Structures are given as C-alpha cells and as structure tokens.
Length: 295
Image 1: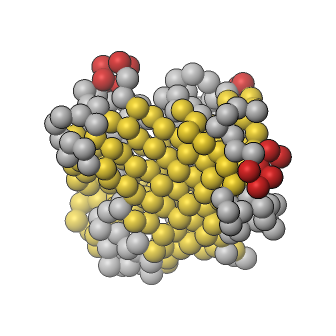
Image 2 (image 1 turned 60 degrees about the vertical axis):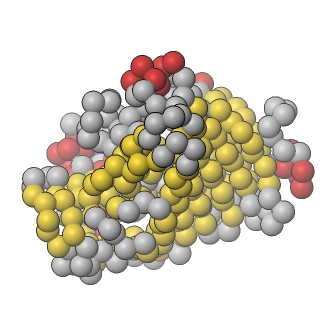
C-alpha cells in the first residue's frame, strides 16, 4: 500500500489505487457510510460519485471518452485551469485537466468521510505554456449524500498571476428534457450560443431544450438541478460565476468522444471564474469550492 494511503480507521480496505480505463491510475475511495468516489491522477479528474445508500451514479462520463496521456476525459469533473474555454492562448480549458497530479493523501476522516487530496505544482512543462510559479490542489470529500470539491491556487512566485477556470461538473440526468436548473432567475449572463451578452435570466426553472452555453455572472451561490424523482443541490464559494452547458443533439453528434445520446443524459453546472480573471498576489492563495448534495 502506498505511503500516502492512510491505514487509520479501517481505511486500508476503503481506498485503492489501481489501473482504471486505459490503464490510467485512479483512486477509488469509500466513506464509512458507503459513499463512493473515483478520482484519476491525470487531471485530478473525478469520474464517479455514488452517494451513500443510493448505489446509482450522479456524474455523467461518456462511454466514448478517451483515457490516456494528453487526452481530456469527457465527463465527470474536469479541472479547467489556468484558462477557461478558449479565453486565452492556452489549449482549450488549460493544461490542468490533462496534467499528471500528485497524490498527497487518501484517508478517512474522524467522522468517516473519504478524503482525497491531489496537487499540481509548476514545472518546466507548465512554465513553457504559462510562465508562473504556483501550487494547485484539489480536495475531494465524499460522505453521506454530499460530494465536496475544493480547488486552491497558491502563488509561489515573485509576481502576481491571473487565471480563469472552472470545475466543469457533468451531472447525470435520466432525460435532459425533463430536467431544470432552479435558482438563476435575475442573474445576468453571456450567451455563447447566441453570441449575446448582458441578458437577464427570467426563468425560475431553466430548462435545457437545445444547445446551451451560458456564463452567469455573480451567480447565486445556491442552485438546484431537479428532475422527476430526484435532485442535486449545488453550492459554491469563491467562484463568482456559474456556467450551464449542454451541446444539444447536433453538437453532441459532432463530438467523437460522446455517444449519440450522451447529450440527453447530462447537464453541466459549473462553478467558474470565467468573466474576469482571478488575481493572486505573491505568497497569497485563492480557494473556491463546489458542494454537491444528492436529494
């Protein structure tokens, strides 16, 4: 057992580092109450979350997703850093989602929660693309009906750094046409599908009836994705924006790593810093969180 897998509180049988899809190393962790989470070291990518007592999957991962060096996983929770989307000179969504992160620890807390912490530090490869000294960490905590994700960025250099980013969370639904996001009414947004900005959301229940790609500015901290029979509450801190995304039928069909009906089984509700870059001064640290609660 690796030294960074805790053996306390029975964790020796609650954590495993094994070969996942494509042989990529992953951590599979169980809380004392049976909640389960799966995280790949490449990208610090959460690919599975099963709340305690449910047995069902709450995240969507495409059956056609590529797993391997340099490949971005389609689904789960990609970590977009230090660039959101194509808002800069880096590759789409930045390098963090395909970089190899280090496992700091996997352990069970005193209250029985499964905890995984991964770290990505500046290297020659990252500096070649983005000339800043930094340490990024992703904390993953699963227990009961909750999955808590925390992204931190510490500036270890001598000059300020600025970034955009997101936790690009793919939430699984049975039928996207029957799902709705509640809590966005009154928020301003940029509509990337229509190419407009400064619109105000009027819907109390935002339904995904076609392709949607919206950045909601200063979004409410508490949202809920509801569908018949169940829901997921989404609470954020630190991230000023929320992105709602679904490619729609035609957009999904154009993606080689998404099955034909994949678009109909997911809605992305993303904690984001997308409108304005986050500035981190030398020696300072920024942190943002997204907490998902199954209902």
